Image (cartoon, rainbow, N blue to C red; front, side, top):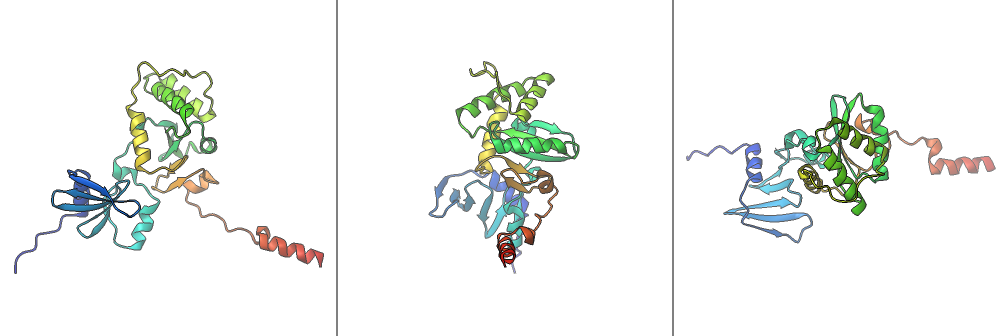
Length: 253
């Protein structure tokens, strides 16, 4: 019998998919799936580039893991492993708040009221977590100007300027910011932030990534409980609509 060549590790396959030369790409009549041709190879890949069908395998390219069971999908569906992606929030022009060991990534628009709620709540958790606030302008031209102005100030080496940006964000106080485009500014971190937001397929902000990779779109009801992965309490029987109606009926009788 002929010797069977060893199969390459899944991590090697996934890494190879990140660097293949694409000869052609076509949307399929299936939502969120593309067909990619690379020489003689054919790969079916999700629109955000995270999942791929290749060689009879379904792989999470970001984490370089093969998905074999339904439970595997549950593990990755609402999780983003930043360490495996080698994504550094500081490369996205992140504003740092807190000094805890565990890191939380938060995408925000400076004018977003729900982002304001998250930023207010995180201030009580600065000893436990380090929050990395990444600005993305999704609420129109005014937000775009604020983000550009603050991002350019972050690029300065002056520590006081960076502290001022953090204070403005936390208070959502942007009075007095210039409206003219900055003459000198390194916009590369901001550009990376916008590309990353599109890669993560952000539908809105705030968008949070917990230290264990769990994600949350919108402001959690309790930021501390969500970060600690505490289950939501079951509603008390006394507060459900059915029991309220029942109690009211009993009182009438």
